[in-house]
Image (cartoon, rainbow, N blue to C red):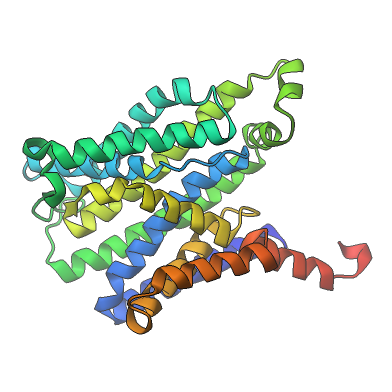
Length: 318
């Protein structure tokens, strides 16, 4: 499928989501939530490009969220955009420190190391009540955006626009990263890392760079969601949230970066529908969906669509 089609679909979908948010105020927070989950899944997709799965990457959403909340509470009157930037920077710095040692490992060891670290972050966030607010989390007053103070309605609509613009830009940027030399090296780590070392390429260095990029994207997701909710809690870094990010990537597929947002949209729709019709069994519905995707679309929704489009083309056009 031509790249321009994905680009067009992404832009049209963003415009549609903004229109829905403008028409129905109740839809604004769910839209922002799905976009933030998509950004986090996009970060996880960077690691899965190298064949590595992190079961604890939600810790960067918590780190980005708490850094944003701390900034707003410590510096009253600070702009929300600055607070988001601080959240991303803190996520990048901590991600770089963690990358220095977790990128030495592969497979289940890599996944479990991240899970262990995320549980440390979750425990600290829940127990350091005087600093983090404990299980109640940190609340803060709604900040201005670009120097403009807004009421709740306009603020949420503006955040919808900001989140959608970031989603479109970052989807294109990550897809270009996948197609770049670094992205190709990440893919080669999955298939034959030893061969990379033989030709003089430092697979670990490239993987560490990808890890930091992943931390930045997940941290941004956490910062955005924290800002719109005016609240951050330890649950944002819990292992179940990390599992949801993995679920979204599997659901959407990693054949194209847009799969992260397609998966997030379907995931959020399933959760919203289940909350209405299957209140006590929404996890079962998610499980059935995951099994169906693995059986009938092992490459995710994007990979399934690309395969079907290719199958309908004449042989000479493939």
